[in-house]
Amino acid sequence: MSNSRKQTSKSEDNCAACNKTTGDENWLSCEICEKWFHAKCMNIKDEAYKVLQQLDSCHWYCRSCNAGVGKLLPTLVSLADKIGVLEEKNHQS
Image (tube, helix red, strand yellow):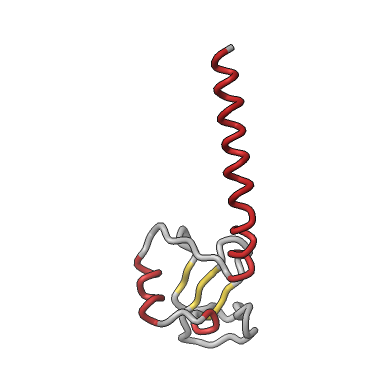
């Protein structure tokens, strides 16, 4: 599933926040850890959940992974800058 979200859980899915499975709950899957969460457990209102379902290019991360991504992004930007400098030097030689 490209947007890593689904409407209802399968019977083997438990919410990583509350460890419960219920039938008609709204669910979100973290794109990094791939754990499933009830939208309610993540304090995502029904209206916001509906918007997330309509966005094809929306990425959702749980709180724990989101904190890790925030720390990783500056490192990735710095690495990309260094690669750009090396590629430019390589083209000049």
